Length: 153
Image (cartoon, rainbow, N blue to C red):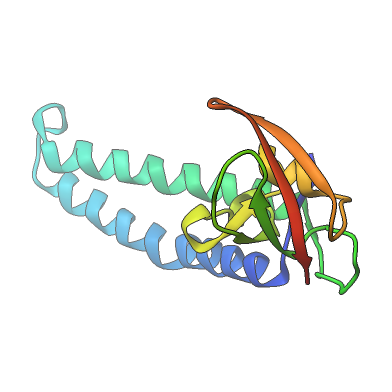
């Protein structure tokens, strides 16, 4: 499955992958070697911990390789239709509430605290293809939410 992301996020994940493959693998290998030198592996907590760390590092490497392999770089183009990279201001229609501004991003970049919503999320998915002035709704665990789009950048 194709994963949409910004060039910045792609570069960040590539850097993390390189760090894991070079630095972290070597550190874990050194910890394993040290733990082996302590003797009996069946009751060696350091060895077990190093093996778990090695497993976690290899799992993250595998995940990053998979993400990067299926990544499609999307550049936020200035248009009046909402898509990846769009910065959108919305206001709830169903109750009194403040306007919120969100940036539409890929799943790996999502961070609601920073105002970044994934295009896979209910809100992000509902926004795609809409324009300034459109009203839309989406489903959440708290029920259907209705919003109006105030601005698209």
